Image (cartoon, rainbow, N blue to C red; front, side):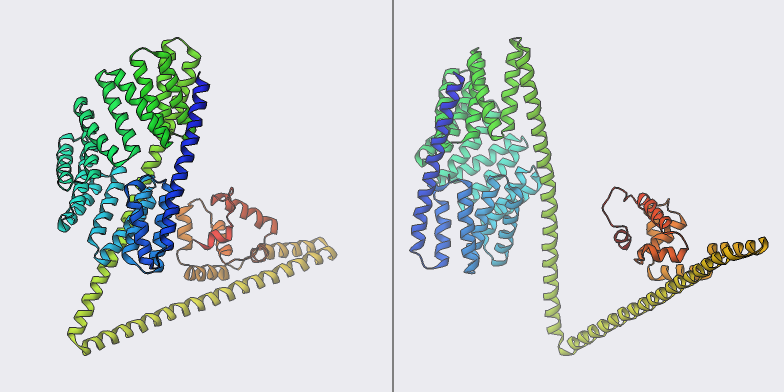
Length: 577
């Protein structure tokens, strides 16, 4: 039975999906035909945006809507149509908000806000503030969201935009609702409803009906909630809004179930499920299955509840609805535990755990997104405010300069030029000194290398002389001189090199020791040579050490610097200190 039911539902889903795609194609084809008759780029932008605002086009797929909005934005940019550009960005921002892509939504919202401010487009500015407020509401940042909603409300009131005022009041009510302040939420929802009824705006009216119904549902006043849901349903039927019809009917069924009217609830769920299948809306189909499962479980029709919980679970697993997976698995675990079916109970408790883990990860990701968005928002706001302050300061300076006259302007200009020359002079002086010190350091280093080469050469010749020397005493003298030459280092020259190096690369040793206090004097000396990009051969000749010893010292140094398991080049690392 289950396999047949699943196959039928899948088949219906495919058919419905094809129908919706075909409808979208027909609508966009009609738009393309209209645009071909329009020559003015501005009129094309307006036509696309008007098309997207039509009630019958509110349920186009997000992909289609985004593509059309992008098209409008591109034409507006090419035609330098500022108002069209702002409205296209607002549409894109709302589309991305609906798909929970808060980063892109905020990006377009901020851009449209800034442009609207610059162009003094108050209606578009209010819409942008409203969008930013909605984004922060979804991210649970109620302080910021309420600030933006009230700013938007103030602008709508200034423009006497009744529809905008109604929406702003509803948004503010939602902030109170999310914080479980139901009294204030109802106050704002009712005020928004009153304005929507005065201007006879069906979309705004049914929006507030739904909001009020949700509050009464949370207050467990289910009869009152159903009353407002039926009012909203009647408007959605007139508007032909199938998705909202299905949602209203499903919510009515949920409230009926809470009232104990299970037959009415099952009937409502059946109606809403038929609508969601027609729309191929998987998330609401899954919620319907869950509601069916709860309803059948409440009237002890266990097998049917199992069937629907499994359908919800399958839908959730297919589309990644972790909340549905969690609810379905949890209920199936409870049912099988009551039936003493340990194997199935364990199976579903594991599925529930995986879903809970996924939900936790999703919430963590949302939190990270919130923090990232807040950081980016604050960064942009700071930059914008700084730019505005700079702009204002420049304007004041210009005005003051004009009023002060040409003499003061000349003095300021002369002072600025003098200061610039002094800065350039100081910079050149510092660069010249550093260049001189670098040359001295190089000469010092070459001198040391040459001297050590000479000492090494003399030592080698003494070794050869030792082989041909006669007499024990002569051999001992030669060996002693050779060893002394091999071990000898020119302390004066080396100390001078160290001083020169510290002058040119001030703070190098201090930074290294602060980060890696276990470095020895030999390690620091090797770091200095590598900082000067000296080869292993040069270092060997300078220190009189074997190449293998230098390589071993470099290996030990990498370990001390924490680079042993890294591909980071040692010289590159030290050049950045």
